[in-house]
Image (cartoon, rainbow, N blue to C red):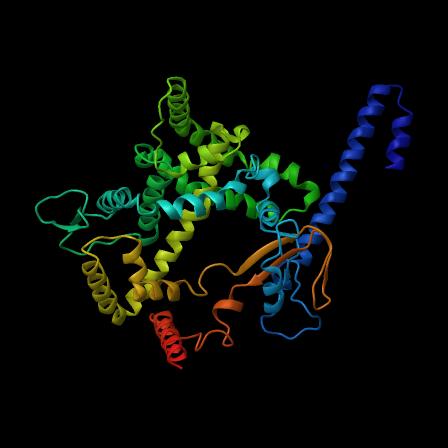
Amino acid sequence: MGILTQLVDHSEYKVLYDYSLLCTTIAVLFLGVFLLWMKEWSIHAPTKLPIVGIESSGYFALIKARRNYYKVVLTHDQVKELSNAPEDTVSFIHASAETMMAEYTGLRQFSVDQYIPDVLRAKLTQNLGNMKEALLDETGFALNSEIPGSAIDDGQDFHRTYFGVSILIPTEWVPVNVFTTILRIIGRINGRVFIGLPLCRNEDWLTISITFTGIVFRAIEKLAGVPKLIRPLYSYTRNLVKDINLHKRKARSLLSPVIQKRLDEETLAKKNGRAYEKHNDILQWFTDRVNPEHKTVEALTETQLHLNMASVHTTAIYFLNAILDLAEHQECMQPIREEMEAVISANGGELDRTTLRNMRKTDSFFREAMRGKFALFTFNRKVMKNLTLSDGTYFPKGTLLAAPSAMFSTNPEFIENPDTFDGFRWYKKSLEAEDRGADNKNN
């Protein structure tokens, strides 16, 4: 660079000097950043990954992955100690914001996630009974719309009625893409709970609610492999968030008329001194719950996208695992079917929270199907201030923490025969607990 500067110094044109110096500086900086990037890439290339199961010195499993950040994997006792720690000590929200690249994806732009736990706990749980008819109606519509061969009654199909909902059943087996079909069914049912009719049956909204998750995580995956220093430039040149913002704009254009109509109706009702008849869906509950500065189309749309990200694919994967396990363990089908029929009959043919609570074999099968088959890590947290645990372990501010899901779901210390699928494992455990309770009471 010194030689180039000397050559430029002899130029009689000051503009040429300034321009050449700028170009030279940029070139050197770019070369330096590129070399640092290549070093990072080569060090953490797949050939350098550790061998699973090999013993190594050190207390923690601490490995720097291709995502360019560290996570400390906790022990079981440490998870127990931190499980009740407040958000200002170890934060799930801030951990999610960092791992989800929130500054690029914009997923924390409106800070609306603070309302989600309260709304789901205080409103959704309490109103499940009131939403029964809507859920049954949408389930029937989703099944008839998404199962091939059942959307059109051509005389070869026949009807079955469940809880007042008529379902078309094909008389012949038909091939389906199971996961895609489940995604669309879950997306439709969630939409009925989240935003209500008629938007939940809008094909564009259904597409956004399903595809938004994949678009976000693809962008995160690409950004995570890039050093922080050049992420802004990389994100800008690769248009990584272009599709995210495009989906947000589409979602706002679809949801805006619905939100604005509701806000106008509420304002008019208050002006005329009459009660506003509120909708029974999550959009309404959030509108009632959020602070005034968040009662906007942008913030409420952001909430809907967050809810879909957290629920559609997660529920679909759980349900897919249950279906595949049921296909593999067909001996569980008849006991589950008999339990459902007996419980529903005992409840006068009604499907409500009591009915669901008494389907203990069904619940056990779903719990077993979910065990150890989803996320590699759980209990993701970020240390918000310097922290020392009771065992003397010190975590500086900013440390990312996690616990392996297998710690809770496949560890022989907590699960008997963890490598064996037992659909009624949790049902039998509940019976054993009842027997112990009865013995203690008699003694």
